[in-house]
Length: 147
Image (cartoon, rainbow, N blue to C red; front, top):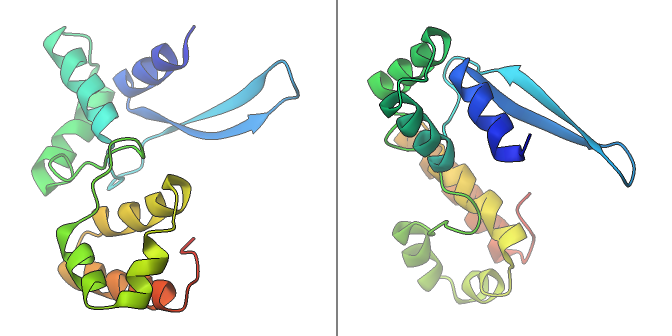
């Protein structure tokens, strides 16, 4: 079974991939857990789910989570993976007014940029997002990694 096959099967049942632990050089352990109410969706998992629905393969336990996410807006605000993330324009605009923070930001690799993107993308309320943005900008202004 491939990694993608595992994730797709978990999604069908309303489960999601969780923690991964190394079992040495020849295997690893992957924890699968029931999707929590209110959990965020990745774009990739949303795409898998859309395909499963079109193929008639989603089960009621999985559809419950899809319908909830579509109903409360989480479906539309799914987050991208690190290879596809696009930094929010308001963050880039704020950095333009902070030369030291912007200079430090430009030195960060994807491993350090992704937590910034994810924290802003997954904020559910505007005031939460604003608070997170301020904290991120403070870290960058001090030349500190955010994570």
